[in-house]
Length: 165
Image 1 (spheres, rainbow, N blue to C red):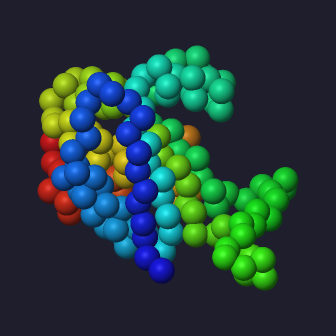
Image 2: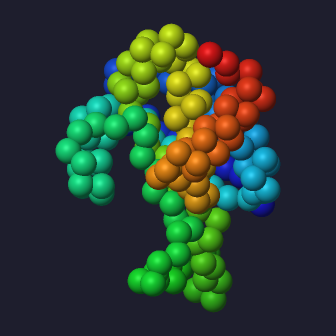
């Protein structure tokens, strides 16, 4: 098993070139390697502000667009259910434990933020993707200390891939 990135483009405003997706695949490998993760699946979806606004409102109760949302599959809760999927044979049921989660990026927000911060669209997408990945594996930024840790980790991975400001 290895790390896999599955992606889809659900918006029409900006073309997502294959080279960018290749770079995101490399960022996934780098970020995961630095965290000691060697297998799993990540689903990435590119959307517009309207779609991410709706998702942000539905799942977080925040009535505005955001730049990135992450939905981790490996979070444990008291109400967690064992989810199984069926393979070819009815006897071969396996737990869905390789799915790390979903990352949803608003290309509208990414473009606006790249212009605001004075760096490339590709760098902003890379930043949001690594940020989303870190959320999938349990990092958060609820206070200054945890935000500093996430920022350092994000920047280190982006540096390794040559995505500087």
